[in-house]
Image (cartoon, rainbow, N blue to C red):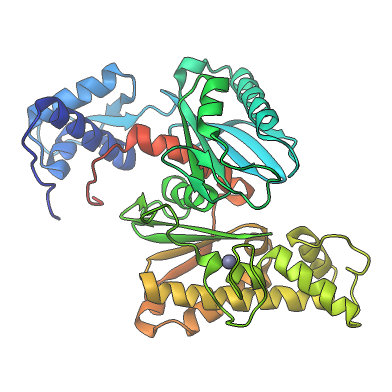
Length: 407
Ligand SMILES: [Zn+2]
């Protein structure tokens, strides 16, 4: 295994980098001895000892007992202290608002499900999130000064550098909302705002299906289609934060108009709302379905009808899986990821969607690439976005700017 490059320069910077290097290794490989930290990082013993002393003084790392001896004394083993600090995550969607408190190893300690409608205005939602934060801290008995920050997974397009929501199509009247500044003011905590697909991708790396994976792509298949990707275990945002917009990959040149203004995007054909519009159109043309008389049809209505054996709903979910499969095949050819994670209700609750997507994703991709790619559901269940939101803070707190190869 390649040793990390030795950097020379500002000694405080080097000390900081070494601290993160040691912390990251203890988090991923603990319980681990100081000698093994030294061996894997390639740092000298004094540097490792100093870094561990710093981390123990901060309360982030603890000694947990003795390992097996390879000759002399048994080595003392180190782990991350799970409850040393906490992180908050917030899932902000047009009809769902959740705040969750997590410890450093990703255990959900307390959760608040808050009301949310697409017509709610930013100031009211910010106030509600702040009360949700109060509630989870109180419920868990955790003081605010032990919380490292609040991560928010929000609908794009957004500017994650400034924490500004630009023009989310499903939040009525939200235009250039400075969400980070508003939430920092309301909660007194550092806040990170990220596009939902990106947050979810990072969440799988930290807590879910991608914990030992460097390059993964996550696709959310729900009323809309979102996506995010990591490269080398870190988020890949592209030049203006739009990387991995798989939902807006063109599938049908002459297809229906998409919310993005283009035609025939994956989202315009395979999302829950797109399938719902198609259901209405087919029923107008005389196709029979239990969905007759329904207002707006989305993922929830389609899944319920398909569960009841409704032919139209089943056919539409099959179509969703097929389109998704083609999008996956194109994605595999383009990025050659190690893992593709599927999340969102349509992918997580329908075996038909999942199986079709996996089958076509594999059979239509370049064969060498499709043989090695793993395609699976999120292991984080319904809470994948709130966990992803929390991982935004955790990655800043525990990973820092350095990268070490997987040990
Ligand atoms: Zn589009």
